[in-house]
Length: 201
Image 1 (cartoon, one colour):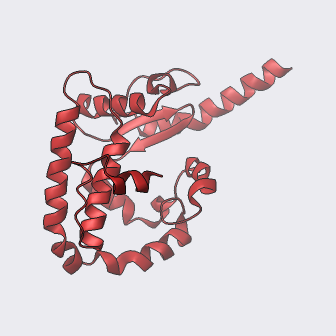
Image 2 (spheres, rainbow, N blue to C red; image 1 turned 30 degrees about the vertical axis):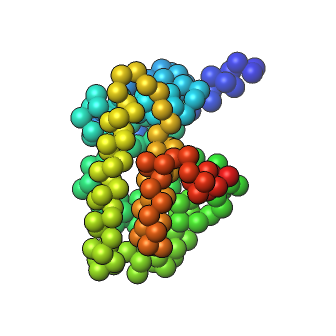
Image 3 (cartoon, rainbow, N blue to C red; image 1 turned 135 degrees about the horizontal axis):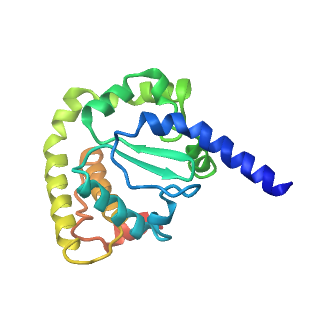
């Protein structure tokens, strides 16, 4: 009886995702295993997953990617025209169920909320991103982005395994502190400074 129930669940999930698989079959992505999808390729550690994703982006020329976590499709959008289309289409701003896992940690703010709630929060911060403000911080963002790319080239030589999140956090700190507070903390060059370590805590 239990075996029949499991087979019924698997059949239901296969039928449910068959249409989605057909719709995204022209999008790049690694072959999947039944039930697991690409889970077996991601690895247990964040660094392994990060390196796997980098390898995929290089392999498929930095285009959009499909990754299946079991029966859940993760569609990684890279093409700027696709990103613009998604962000300007109301039905598409609803986030997948996987974001609900973040609610206990992050609550339901701009990152995790969907629909009307997301639009309300997005509308509140829109004045912060008008062109005059963005133009005034363009040089800071360009300089730090170039430094960030240089750091990635430096630490990704050979077979080094590194924590991408740490480098991105340092880039974010540099940009936010310099643009919002006018203070340069240089976290990318000094990742072990007192301020950077204090923020990590």
